[in-house]
Length: 105
Image (cartoon, rainbow, N blue to C red; front, side, top):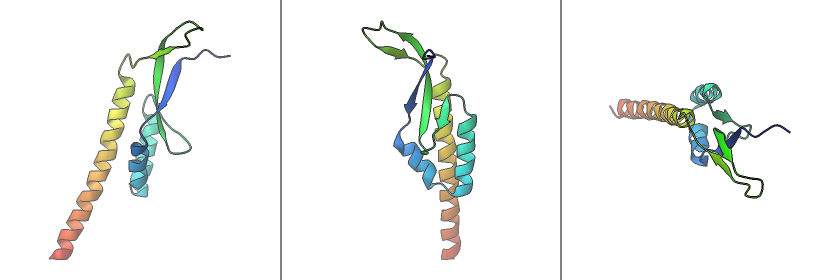
């Protein structure tokens, strides 16, 4: 078979829930960006997984794998994704606050 070169780890369910709560137009923007970010993947079940390169592997007897974000690309992508989600959440909250203030006049 193919040698194992990377490990996929699911990001917290909270990220998927935050994306799901966004308005449809914002959600589409975020999902498209995930597809273009290095080392992130949007699964069919809407979960986001991060890819980590396999650095080394112990003998077959030990069956241990060692992963490391050696060039920080995975961390940078996760950080960027969280910033993008926060931006859209904040923008939506601001719109709601402005609408509430307008109605209260």
